[in-house]
Length: 211
Image 1 (cartoon, rainbow, N blue to C red):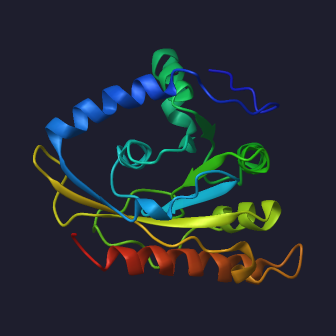
Image 2 (cartoon, rainbow, N blue to C red):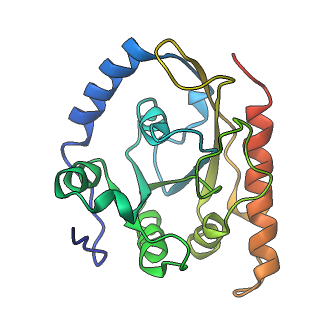
């Protein structure tokens, strides 16, 4: 399915679908949300979280009062019906493994327009529960190009996702963009440093365990 990267937009049906998701989650999982007071009420923002399950974007969006836009792997858009639903949820396709700059630039435009961009810096789900030590540098690229602040989030569980699974979603303190200390426009070292900082903050939240 074709996705128009030339203009940023937000789906009007987002909140209605989020209501259905909330109904489903309350019957499937035992979710505790911690630190929601740390979510900025307005302004450009990048939300970064560890990745354990395909439902992770819904788990975050279900609690966040802001509309969150996510990247989703291109393969999910092959089915037209699924693609329409994913786009309605304000997600957009990225082709992994090739440095898809159309998707990255679209992420930057979202943030520059004052929206919230959600990303899982690990790039893929982790099946050991624990966040990966290192992430992909896409999150750092968007941080550098937009000057936006970052909100670290962790989803903690010590068991497979199933009915009754206990989950703790913890929102950390906002990290101001200047704390990433970007000084050069093309420094790979600075990108790696910023990515490691993001992953370290996510891991610290995750290590607090269940609320």
